[in-house]
Amino acid sequence: MSEMKERMHTGALYLPADDEIMKEQIQCLDRLYEFNMTRPTEMEKRQAMLKEMFAEIGENCYIEPPFHSNFGGRHVHFGKNIYANFNLTCVDDTHIYVGDYTMFGPNVTVATAGHPILPELRKKAYQYNASVHIGKNCWIGAGALILPGITIGDNVVVGAGSVVTKDLPSNVVAVGNPCKILREVSEHDKEYYFKNRKIDKNLL
Image 1 (cartoon, rainbow, N blue to C red):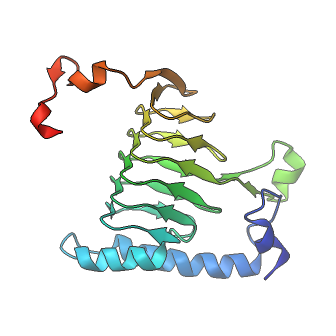
Image 2: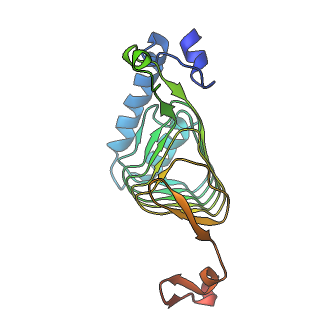
């Protein structure tokens, strides 16, 4: 294993154009291309491909193509019953962990890769990576962006278009750019699912 590849998952600066890294990456991207070209009727084929492409993926996960990923899911760890709408982007230069029952709206980006502020280092194409952890039963709204190194707790709702720059604890609703906690999940949420629309208790 090359020195640069060893650095990928440590948070250290490294050069992503390293020959060994690029060889592995292009193979992953070829497979990702094939996944995105599958037909809607080829559900079993998609499921089989995801099990091959991802580091881990549980039962009953669904990803709506197109799916975008730097390493085709090679460093993505999904629990079970995860749903991702169109255009989920996982910048998986290092590991992304997602808990059971989490949902992604369309056009969500989960990024692990960053570049130094110092221009001289960027000019030489240095990069660093920091893993992302998303808990169980979260709802990540359409167009949200989760930055490198972020941890999100369980049962969190991230509002559409939010940019998550800091960790979020469990059981909160958070919105905005930068994303901030709006409130905790409350008793009100046990009665109403949207504005003044009440929850049918028979659904629970």
